[in-house]
Image (tube, rainbow over all chains, first blue to last red; front, side):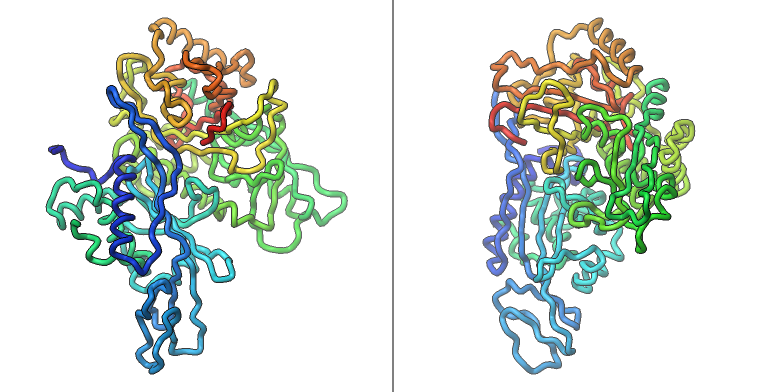
Length: 230
Length: 344
């Protein structure tokens, strides 16, 4: 066991392993959502003493997640089979794919693509995402912030650790939104010390814990079961 | 060290900037703007110099400025010198660019709201470099707003004296290894590098014949810190490229052998002399020697940093210390020919 203090970061190969573990747990515990897929960016031979191992570098992708925002600032995801929310004042029961709203506004569904990409510079995962309307039009940064659930907008405003910027996707040459990584190692370290009471986590769980903090910021929660050891 | 820094900071690209024909409303059309652009600067910062040439001819509307070279929209956050080294295989003087004031391609380029966007991007890169070198962003975070502004302004004005004064507050230093002076900065032995790789599929004799880059998808951008291995042997520029592109050069990983002290210093001297001539004549980059089946291995056709083509045996510490940009990243443009179907 490594005795020196853990700095909250992980290596590229640890990220790849952790990503796999995360995707598996997600599939198991979040059946209502589509699964995360692994997009391979390259295969890197790593030479260590006498052996060569092949580490796959890539990123996690979850696309076409439908997020619906009603007037009451309640957010549900269309992909969930059951209706999760309905307006208290409205007696009509809800459809499985839509929410009713109290006002006369149409409920506009937005589609999100999420990519979890490893930053070699900061040695932490970084969340990239983009949003678009059903007609395919991309949403600008301001629009996205207004579409996010109220509590995540609050998190964005108040937290010095989580803020969103528009930057170029590391592989796709297109503008995406990025959740800033600078403080990630700090809060990951705190999370593990405070919650798990270990100095160094099992690296496979890194992404699960990371996502438990980052997910709610962009309206994606994870079920409690995912945080427990299998 | 100072001499090299001056060389880098004084480097400039003569630009001839044409207004896109769709935005010309006067007859005759305005002549192009001739601007000398600092290599270490960024295109949007030139706008105050350029706009007067065209303001009277623009159609009504709000300005959303972007630049383009032979149809390729230019990424504004890449330093001007790097764009030139990458996109002009055969250096074009003056470099003919097209400017647009309308119709920003926001599906391709991240938004640029003038100098603030460029400054923000610069400071973030500075933080990233700080993190790579020190394992934290404290140096940059502890700079006061006014110091950061002073640093930024020195870059905008390409004022090296002001930059040196400002960056002393950043506690920057030099990279240490056996072949460089020992003012230490590099706590973790990592160099911030941004590598722009153009994978050329065809062979071409002269740089003039190189096909133009028509899409950013043809360029592989590698933003990965370079870890210097201190094995008592010199870690060269060649070793650095191989380390940064393991998917291409995976067979050989160890630093080049057989480089004795004198030879390395020799190449250092040569490089110093060569850099005085911007043309880089006689400074042809060497084809990759792997000792294994040469046919299968990628060939480095061209490697440019700050407009020069350093010899591949140059110690990476020298390269990084002397040729880095103000935000502490080393930007390297490389044309590689991969013979087989291997791609990045």
